[in-house]
Image (cartoon, rainbow over all chains, first blue to last red; front, top):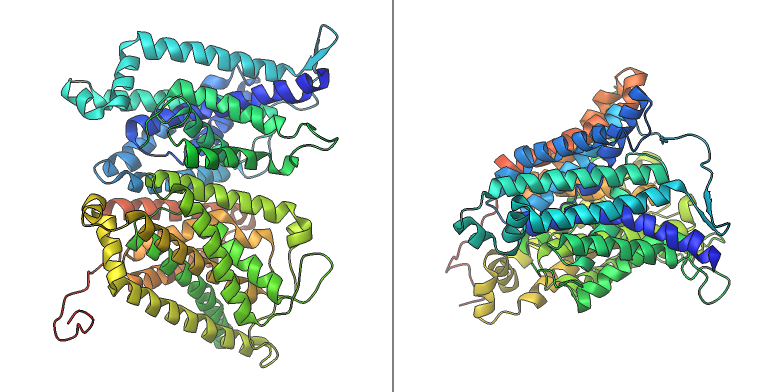
Length: 296
Length: 320
């Protein structure tokens, strides 16, 4: 039982936190700008490398150096929106999807040009796990990830329900024409979406980098489970995406638990495939997601 | 460079360019005719490559099969398996907005890559499959064999081109473009929109499988790196957008033009000093990414824009 909690449940929640932070942004962008943002994973990568550089320069702990990564990721998405996405906004959104595919490649090749393609780590050496009540052994990072996602959930809920910008965002997501007629500043809403999406992506990138290592494909390898989380939560429902990310992360880790025999239920090499399987089942039976998101 | 070396550089260029031309024609059927976004081209390419390689290679302990079947059988089988894969993907999400198809197609490509790397008994994992034969092996040796293979590739390109053109002009193709340009109107006149889209996606996927098979036979060797998703999927998209979506001539011209840019930048970057050269391949990626953005914004109809068939009474025999 303790083994289940220590090696499957808590890592699952921590992985879920990474997916959730990415999926919130994807879901918001899908809801407000109406396209699947394929470059979101690479924004995460950029956030991780930005933070890494700040760690190199200042020697701070990666979580304290996070603002550097956030600034870099937000600048990147704002720039990408201005140069590459905005000129295509009057066309069918599928052109913007293609453009975001291109932006993913542009960010990745820039990362490889600037930082090279070797693996990097934030902190060298093995991190000792923390022992709680002599029973629960958790890594500090997993606790931090879970704490961050709880804070993010609270902040997001407050932002969406209590602030003017948050409420305008929900309005635009629910009915863009009505929102425009009502005089909401759509461009401002779009900008806020990118800032929030980019910031959360950078945090997710750093957490993922802390968990394993940092390399140029870090974010791209996570895009599939994050899309699955977005669909699971319902497009345009940030809180749903958060929940979806946690569920996908948990299922991925728990799928490797020896449920029936002594062998892992699913070969760990196929962990990501479980996310895809969930996505396929959702697309067949419930494409609007669990929280009744919009079916675009 | 000596003339013979240059000639065979050109041969290698045209073989790879021909394989990309088939991929580009296939994507044109899906995107140019049907408006369907496929982000998993590499996946269908890989299915085709592994099908044909396993069916035609010499028997080996390290992977499934090695059935030594004739190469044409392998190529036809690869079209079949890739088509079936395409059918499964399309069946699930064809009724949804195209973004969902994009997510699902990239998903299937990633899963297939995982299967190829993990299932040693089937594909010999990252070590790959050796002794994949070429058609008419043994007839010619060395560089002459490359010339023969070049001829075969471009014969197939020609065949695919004719089929695609026929599809475009046919009532089927016209209905498809009606679906692409105005889905509601097509539905209103009683066209089964989802069925047309499904068929388009399957035809495109099958053609991508053929391209994969040809590349396995060309290199005589197949490993997971040969189906690198980024390069194949991405280059094909840039080729089609630059060449002209909806136009088959444009697809071929785009494939050759972008492949020429890609190959020539390689020659240039190879001349850079060693410490810069290792990173220079990323500059090429960056340039291709920027090229795509430029085409999307300023040049959407491409080098040879789409031209709808003109109704000509004297030539039109099918409609009297």
